[in-house]
Length: 72
Image 1: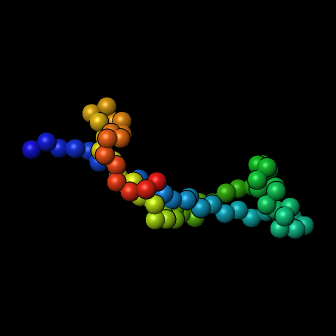
Image 2: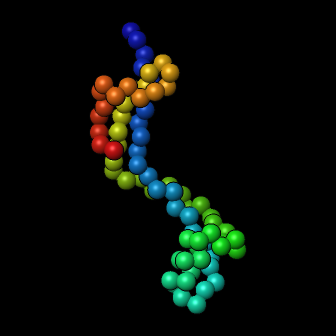
Image 3: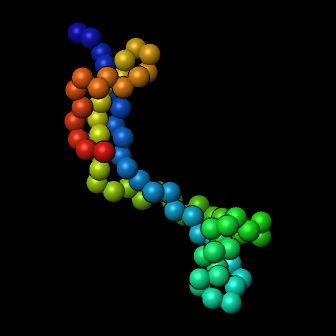
């Protein structure tokens, strides 16, 4: 019986936090967004949400789009 490699892709966010000294929340967000070198990010973890897609992979590792299950 043949074997197939199946990819399951689950949508997720990787959450990071940082401490920013600023006069307001808006300024803190702007400094973090603009890549201020004093900002040090700490990974908080991965949060998955319910959007899943499953597809078989070809021998070359490409997705075989002829049959896909799920959304995403």
